[in-house]
Length: 323
Image 1 (cartoon, rainbow, N blue to C red):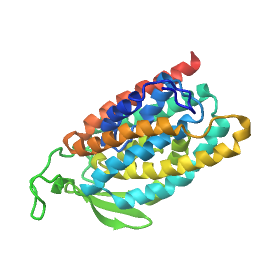
Image 2 (image 1 turned 30 degrees about the vertical axis):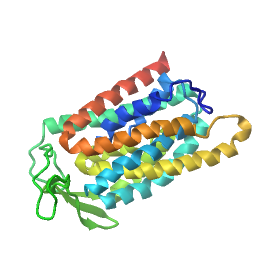
Image 3 (image 1 turned 120 degrees about the vertical axis):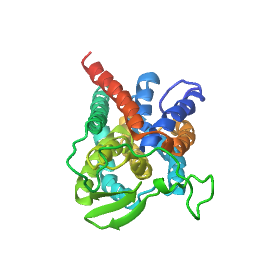
Image 4 (image 1 turned 135 degrees about the vertical axis):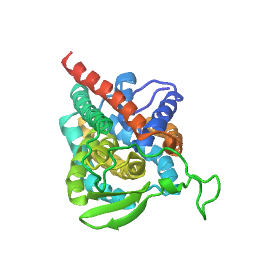
C-alpha cells in the first residue's frame, strides 16, 4: 500500500502493529511512544520530510485517549499538574513548528537534532537511576522519594471500593494544594510538592523541542518531572499523556495552517493523515494496555528500558550525521 503524502510503501498492518507494541510499554512512563515511532518512520519507512512531524502528532491524537481514560478511571490523574503543563507547553509547540519548517527541512539536519533530543532524554533517565541506586541519606524531604521504589501491587480494596477494582488505596492521587506558586499532592503515603514558577519556563522550552520533533513533548516532560522535580513515575504518567494530547492537537492545526502558507514552495508540510491514523489505532490499544499494566511494573524497570532505547537511537542519529 502506498500512502499519498509521505510516498511510503508498506503493508497497512505494519503501522498499527508497531505502534501497539511501542505504546504498550512507553505509556507506562507517561510517554505515548511518538519519540520512537518517528525514528521508525525516518529510518525504516524513509519518511523524513517536514510532514513526518505532524504525522507523528496525528498518531498522538488518536492513540493517547485510551491511556488517559484508564488513568482517569483509576483516579491517578494529577489535574493541577496536567493543566500547568498544557498552559506552558502550548505556545512553545507552535514556535517549535516554525523552527521545524524554516530551519530543519533537511532530513540530515533533522536527524542530528533528533539525536541530541534523544541523548538528553536518555541521559536524564540514567542519572536518575544511578542516583536512586546510591541515595544520599540527608534526611527525609517533602516531595522526594529517592530512597525507594514505589510499591508495585494492588492493595486490598477499602470500604466503598468494589472487590476486584483497580482503584487501590495505594495508587490514588489526592490534591492537597494548588496555587500559582506550587502544587502539592499525596500518593502512596507520601506528599510531593513542586514549584510552578520553576515548571512553567521549563515546560515552555520543552514545548519548542516537542513541536519541532513532532512528539508533543511527552518524552521530555516525563523524564524531567521524574529527575528534576522528583515526582514518582506512577503519578505523572496520566498528566503527561493528557498534556501531550492537547499540544499534539494544537501542533497538527498549526502545521496544517502553515502548509497553506508554504503551498507555493512545494514543500510537504501537512500530515499524512492515513499513515498517522493507522499508527494511532495501534497506539490507542497499546496506551490503554500500558496504563492498565503500569501498577504491576516497577518505576526503575520502566525507566531502564526507556533509557537504553533512547540512548541507542540518539547515538545512532548523531553518528550518522558525521558519517
